[in-house]
Length: 105
Image (cartoon, rainbow, N blue to C red; front, top):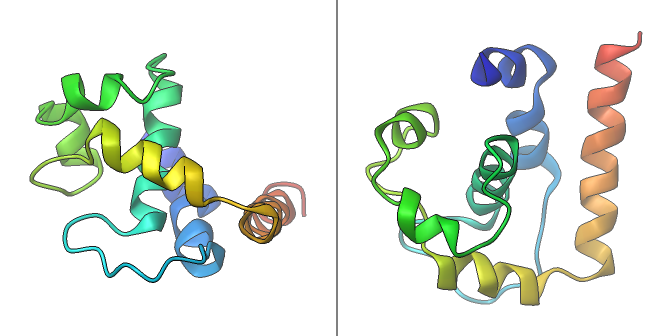
């Protein structure tokens, strides 16, 4: 149900299109926008800490919804938290506004 809502409002697409992090590392498994989307889905299911990521790493519901063999680990989520700066928050606000315009037009 959450995935259908996500697709209807374009949440993941908006994040992928607008979210940028000043990050010189080329990620092999989990891009920064994928990690943000994972964090959102974790919060939706009341898994509010990054530590939950290790418990959910191979959870079939999450891996299916996010179309991944395994989810990002707690260290990966924590590293993203350290990289997010005001410019990244600007992109998140832009994505939020884009979604709001889709919902309330």
